[in-house]
Image (cartoon, rainbow, N blue to C red; front, side):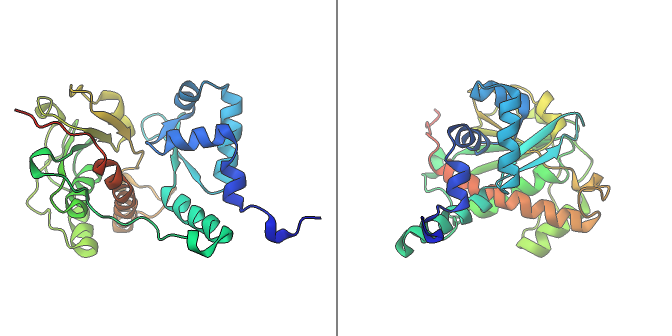
Amino acid sequence: MMSTGHVAPAFVHLTAHPLRWRLLTELAAGDYRVRELVERVGQPQNLVSYHLRLLRSGGLVTARRSSFDGRDTYYHLDLERCAYALADAGTSLHPALGFDPISSSPPSTPSSVRPAVLFACTGNSARSAIAEALLRHRANGQVEASSAGSHPKPRIHQDAVRVLRESYGIDISTQRPQRLDTLTGLRFDYVISLCDKVREVCPDFGDHPRLVHWSIPDPAAADGNNGPVGYPAFVRTAAEIDTRIRYLLPLLAHTPQEVKP
């Protein structure tokens, strides 16, 4: 009989299945709905849904109702949990194979060819403004970060200003929301939507930027059913965005750049 000491870690068991690995690979790029995953992996919906349930049970994938259409659900890969699970799996094989979770080192590129990232949401007063500020902060000047909204609010939400100041030492008190359609002539390497609604109406920016969706509820509209309300909702939202930013940085470091004339 095989001893329990030789049983592969749960992470290895869970991710070894080819379809589950493919789903994780797709979700590593951004949040998707079931029908989108079905199209991307070319497998029946009942099979995709079954394996998503297993990944959710294993804690690697989370699900969140769309704020645009409550009949839809967005699935999200928890990269932080994957990093720790992978490190634990390596350590169980040999202590030398363990590693520290990802750092937030900025990409190292010449300033003339910095990656350009646009964060989009509806009001540009909370989520996208927080994301822009955190990317600027984490990238240490090596990324051109912008944000805009389809229907911008008159000003940045006071709790967005507060959480960035108190938790990250960033001041955006003088920043003002801007419209998405005023940026359509600019070049972006990544266009990241943080709002389920704006994902459907985001304009075409040309030059084939990589389109990524992060399904993150509006902390200003939190109702308490899915987490804290008021300022605590902004604290949680900023923490989630910051985690996603840290895992975005290595991708930006490997973004092919072209020097524009």
